Length: 126
Image 1 (cartoon, rainbow, N blue to C red):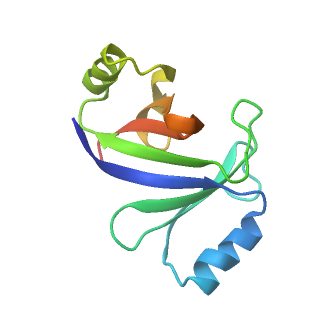
Image 2 (image 1 turned 120 degrees about the vertical axis):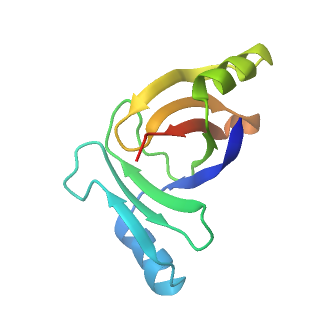
């Protein structure tokens, strides 16, 4: 069952400008950094004030390139296989099946209305 919204991710073209905006102008607390300026696949910064994370991402992968302005909403689930099968049965077409993710646990991606990127995430055990 989907249990909540894990995060809302925003693709940005200039991470330095985005950091100034979220940290200095909006005064949001930085929760985590995944990767770094030198990381080969992606650089992500996470902010939260209520439990749901806002992540800003700059990807460097040719498989998943940065598309400035793209928004992705990740939904948490306690059983990704069950939810994946239920959503497929309801006609949702996934762009990737449940796949291990080194940062999250297991993730499956699909598109919503108007091409909005969505994903299911089952967190790995702490």
